[in-house]
Length: 502
Image (cartoon, rainbow, N blue to C red):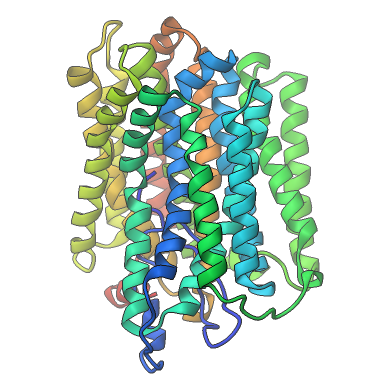
């Protein structure tokens, strides 16, 4: 996926000002080391960072790797149309829905134990995915992988924050962010190579030796750390109602394809989702240690930017999902060729983000978002305009490049807008909310675009659905630009500088 903002957590000792739980890009973390300018800079070996990055890269790759392998998995396990979407959604829903809960666990329990627990769950679920004999087993094991990722990621970044100080910490966080932003490019290519050479089961089997090696090395290199509490302080009901409500919401959206938007099936699913999410809001107001303190929702910059993050991520991940199927089922590309065909999209996202980073201070994040959304809309219209006999260079590539150039600046601008005005002691929570929006948006985006597309199992279905999907995306991007203009506060230059520092 694209450049992802870091997710930070409160550390249990000298680092009480926010640490990371996320997959992220460096905007939220790169200068967190500023909080340790006066720390005793004892140089530590980079081996601990290497182990954490090994595990984190495995988690990041498992999203884009699976996208490229989906047609092969679908044929092997005789997927129905909805199974394609759930194979992606189950992973991002559980990883996003449980992310704040996983970060809280890393705070209360010792970080090495949480890292190993998440790593163990992820690796075991990878074995189940690799040996799956049905769509149901695949979807359930992908959900378990997502749960493992939600425990592993915050603990890994917590270990990095507690191991390194000063310049070493700044370097470690910059590398962490780079790994996150490289995920899409490496994942689509790596997935294509593995699937073409060894079959789709190899994309899951490869996680097993990596997971075992990371576990053994962490036992040797990472100290247990100290517990600051027990599970009594955990908001388990909050986490359960949040995840259940989100699952019901995605199930409702997905079901519209076969049952329609006004059927009893769809309305009951939407009602169940609403009840569960309202229950989550009520629980958060009453428990002593909520996942998200109610006051958080009153921070306009954070809530509006996280909303934009959810929608734009949904579009990007949904577009990658549909194009993986389109390139292979309609254009006849092999898995490895599909991986190569995605590289211009990844490259243009990276280029757009790099240009945007240099423009910050001259162009407000709000203006950057609006322009980026119109560029994404233009790219979507190019994809929507293809005929019944499309080609990659003439019909797909121009849309990919434009969408990437629009999306890259969006992720930079959203990160800065969300964090502007957030005090340092709350930066961890703010990044966690934004990252949760990222993952949940991905799941809802895949479900929504798949529902609009209709039949994903045949060439004719994809050719018919593609123009409709990307016309809807273009309209949604223009509407979102209007939302940004109205809802996102205008940042002054000192706010932008503050946000970049946190």
